[in-house]
Image (cartoon, rainbow, N blue to C red):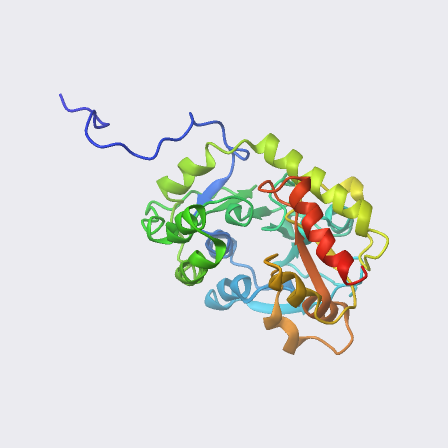
Length: 324
């Protein structure tokens, strides 16, 4: 009788005993965009309302499915600007930006049929799914995993049979940063991201599932909250985004909106790496609008579990040197 698991031989990476997933009810995919695409194919909507302020990666599944897209803009509190009228067979996708938009989500559910609402929690991993058609998660934006996406939905979908087999190739940047530096693995990170442009739905890889199974989610959530609150205690008075702390839990970054030329460049030169979300939408928005300000002036400050208050103070000291 042959064992299902090999005994003896060379060692694998040693990881702690697996814990329960934070979202055991979720369907598991190779990425958030593949989860979204699978949902679209299953529901077959006539039209999807999407925010202007969103990455092209989330628009691609809609276009590939041949579904009509209508766009809406945002007020400066991240609420929907237009008085949208959802028609039968329409869907509305709303992003919980940076994990600070829980209040806006509740207002959306009060106004619209919940079965027409899809919440994108790619930037809000620790925000529990609400009573809506579906909630989408992207764990690689919060943890050191190469890929993966979760879909929590009230429709009777099943996971793909085909398992994603490319996670090992996408893991090079994770190992390079661990062994050397962020700069050393950056090219590999970019290459790994490009491979996820193929969003034909596949089941989450065994590697990613195993890596996620050992995350101490409570500790991660606590660290992110503590770092976020500390940054807010220093910068909140200067931030042009009014953050409701009652809805903040395990946020992705601290979204600091401040009209200062070159702030991102100064931080990056100090090896505080800052992302830009999402430059590709700039051609679709009106001059002077909130979305344009987010692209040009938002400084999303790291507040994640890798850092203690010592590192957070380094970030703040860089900003303090230029008068913030």
